Picture 1: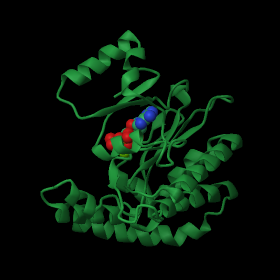
Picture 2: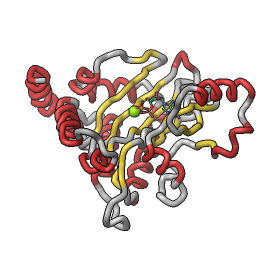
Picture 3: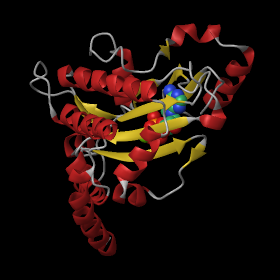
Picture 4: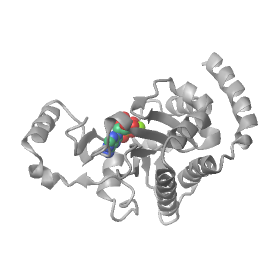
Amino acid sequence: MTLSENYILKACEPWEMVTYLGRRSNGLNDVLPQNLAHDSIQSLEPQERKRLDTFISSPSKPFIIMENLRQGLNEKTLFELDIKIGFKTASKKELIEQSHPSPFMKRQKHRCLDIAYQSTNRGWRIEGITIKGHPQKHPKLYFSLFPVHFLHNFMSKLPPEKQSLILAKVEKITEKLKRYTGDLIGPSILIVTDLDKDSPCRAHLIDCAHGSLRKKAQIPYPEVANAAAQFHTTIKSMNTGNFHQYDNETIRLTQRSQLLTSLM
Ligand SMILES: Nc1ncnc2c1ncn2[C@@H]1O[C@H](COP(=O)(O)OP(=O)(O)O)[C@@H](O)[C@H]1O
Ligand SMILES: [Mg+2]
């Protein structure tokens, strides 16, 4: 829920709260959006406070108030890309820990979706995309059939300086994930900018709702970092126009996707 031009309110799962509260010790401080400490809520403007109160008065989950990444950007030329990162987007272990009534079935359902949406092969998928102020309204399955087309459309319409900034920021997120020692499942990278020459270009890790601590907590777990690296490689190839490697893959995956959809 948007509280104002400055703030977003998100009701969050326990793991998202753990991630934000531990941002200084878990190494993700620089890549998570800034958030307001709960004891700073008094600093909100009266209008923001009013919106927050309506949320709090309804039975609510724990929440965080984070910076609105669209702040200061021009809605008419807004570019926004939400990429879900990970080869898998649900963990049986986490579901069991949360006492989910049917962790096996839920994990199986996600496994099918991950195959259909291509997360299993690519390590990323498009959750939402806005180009020049126009949200691209397609089913997720459609995005997953032509992801390179949509990404190319997104990147190529931005000036080269912004493309380079995006690349650098996604690389930084990947580096941070390489050192992260928890088991983060299906977070997103949110990229937001617009066409104004001097406006900011932001890329942050959001939607850290799912994950768990690992037994060997000191050792980084490479899976989500590898997935982010694959996304980085894909957008990097957009700069060099190096698409041919995707042609055959896209055809093969399209056929597999159609088969899966007909089975679901
Ligand atoms: N800090 C933020 N600033 C601006 N928009 C945001 C921010 N966080 C999330 N959003 C918007 O909300 C959408 C969903 O957020 P997300 O955290 O992924 O929630 P969900 O758990 O519903 O997937 C994102 O795709 C983006 O459009
Ligand atoms: Mg999300």
